[in-house]
Length: 99
Image 1 (cartoon, rainbow, N blue to C red):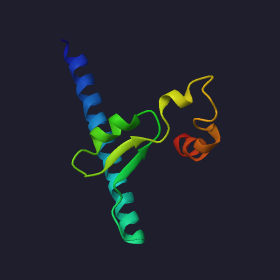
Image 2: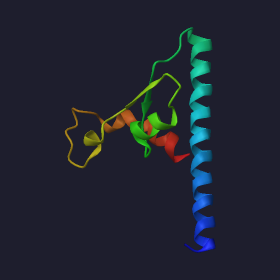
Image 3: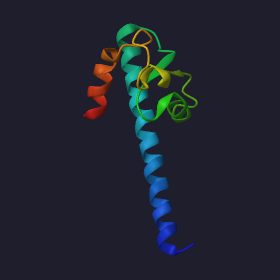
Image 4: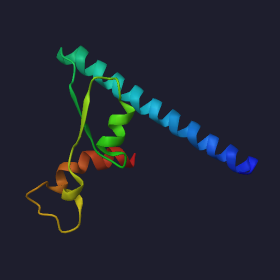
């Protein structure tokens, strides 16, 4: 393996680690805000976006929170039945992910 390729892989790994840390920190802050304002700790985090529930669950290991998909991938495929999940329900998620 060339030194340049090794350095690139190390940068990518460092970047991934930093992204994971930032996401975990953001969820932790949101959970603390939730607890402070509503008086109880959230048990479940809903995942939406490219990371998905499995990836987010890995990032939040040790937090004590379960992670599940907001809308399953099957509901987002072309031609999916609109009764399973209306795409309009994801408008806020779409807007948050775009910004």
